[in-house]
Image (tube, rainbow, N blue to C red; front, side, top):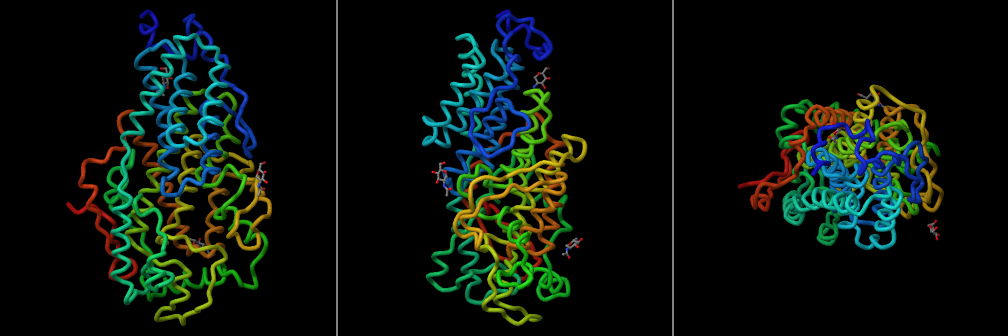
Length: 483
Ligand SMILES: *[C@@H]1O[C@H](CO)[C@@H](O)[C@H](O)[C@H]1NC(C)=O
Ligand SMILES: *[C@@H]1O[C@H](CO)[C@@H](O)[C@H](O)[C@H]1NC(C)=O
Ligand SMILES: *[C@@H]1O[C@H](CO)[C@@H](O)[C@H](O)[C@H]1NC(C)=O
């Protein structure tokens, strides 16, 4: 019991407890994770994030099990474990609780990798710490307890939202409205085969942001896509109709490399999503002296911000239901003749267009890091390794080259251009996405308190999901619960 009496003491500053003496002698643990990331700094918390990147990118978990949910649970488990350690004064170490919390989350989602990668990382880290048997048991007890409660609290209603979204699209299929998302292949077979993603995210529960529809009304009500037809739409049309087209004679290698880097599938590359590339940015820029507690808090904030930003973003996308360039240019509109053979450089993503999800995530990451660093940092490189997977135009099978950034904002700008060059977005959508990402990141930073992150959906009302496309482009009609 004498150990718990010391609960309020800053554990980092002393070697006063015999049982805790080893706790901080090993902040720098050699990474056992094979990855394509250039290393600036590492510690047990970052090692687990890098292992997540590796197993997630290798295991082809459908985008359906949003990587953001697992990433947020991983880093919230680490953070809650440190808080639990502070609160209980258990006689174990910060590293121990972080390790066991992380292990529990990843082992729950990636059973296939548990024997070959997840358990081995746990064992090697625990060996390095040279814990006593009691420290190990207490670390496991605390770490796993917080991890399990996070995993159990999360609920989604994805199959219900898919039905609602399909019903909304089917209702318009007979007479698609200019500016509104529609089937690319509007035949009975094409409609049946249409894959749709992210629709369930709009009804997931954020951790820090309040109800996403309220958040949008309060902070983002000035954002909307153009009406169609309108002069504003004509401008957006002109900016994307060539830049995103696969057979545009002005395409450069740099445009293609940029588009591919941010959107193509990759083989043997451990940074397959924008979120994971921001983890690599942390890896590359975090000062070596950063404490484990500060690292864990940064990781918790950035992954909660990614999670909540994706919910706000998806609420906007499936609220405006704006059409993708391929839909717009092929169909034409009152000011533009159809271009039936218009083909985007990369495949059109199967969800509504406005604003850009990639850029929202990029801006979220950039904003969290700018706040943490009190400004920009750079230059640094991220994301190389492996080769581009099939479906990546002429770059399929070629090596993924890392991109070098002079600052965090440079990394965000790179993604903005990439999404236009891919033929997936309009300029207004990548510009407004920066507002969405930075607004959510700022909100999370200001409201990140010990009590908010929870992620529990209220009750079975979540089964009554309702969706309907707007009557005209620019109107907002979000997916919601109808009680
Ligand atoms: C745990 O307590 C220490 C000492 O009071 C504090 O510096 C640290 O921020 C706390 N960690 C968390 C995650 O709250
Ligand atoms: C991926 O890596 C594995 C193991 O190193 C290798 O056998 C395989 O050929 C690589 N695949 C590609 C497409 O490079
Ligand atoms: C895209 O929009 C932004 C903001 O309105 C503007 O600064 C930028 O010049 C536009 N890009 C192009 C290529 O017109």
